[in-house]
Length: 355
Image (cartoon, rainbow, N blue to C red; front, side, top):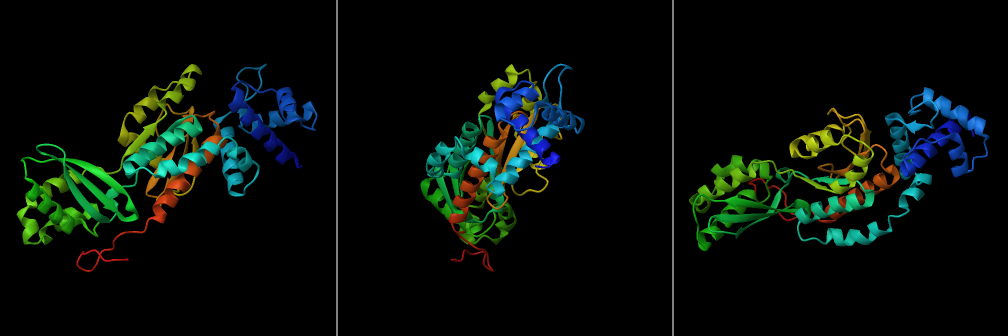
């Protein structure tokens, strides 16, 4: 083994051991834990070189070493590359994930995508032992296959939309006045005339194309479209209880709570942390928001890059477990949506056409 390769192998082991015991690691602990054939002096020299390169540091002069953000990033990149090549990290990552495969079927069996996103965030959190999150695809950019109106109160109705890829969402709508069941049914037909085969974000520009029957209920339709004009991309979070470990370790989590308490800010943070927009991305301590220097984000895209999921935690999180969990759920959700055929296409007059 070349000296450089040996040095980085020692770095990987140091980061792995640190994430397990979270205390400074000495050269003798590494030799004992991993049974190196190299003498302790060689390990000490390599640790000194890694310290000069900025991968590790000593909290105080007589202590062992602790990984820096740069060291954690190196370790995370190694895991991602190894997973892609089915290397050593792939074998480590699969350990302890048996329950994931048992839960995939139940996860995708939920009746609506709202339930799937919510359950997937919980699933990621339980697998990674950190915060799990889902940023759903923007339903406004997807073509509508079916629209159904259901009364939920005197002036309240629920709009259920089924989109291409068989994603479904429900939207609560408050009407300014009551409508009877016959009117509600006709409004539903008028709404479907507008939406079917169209992207939701474009529906507001085609109200003038309504037929005579649809124009009769244009006030209902316009009220619904106005409600749907709001942000249709949502954040689902789970696993905040896992931050207790970071609190005990002395991390200042107030900046993190400010971010996750603001859905728009959290969404922007995650999306800005993914410049490539595809595949798995790991960020350690380098965020556009101050105060998150001690935290790490592991994320991946799904549904043709329109959705993002991942896990957020302290920088000493178990990267092998987090990366494999994120990749596993991203693949499951992408396979689920890919398996459902797109339901509609826009014809020359905006009508639905069979595929």
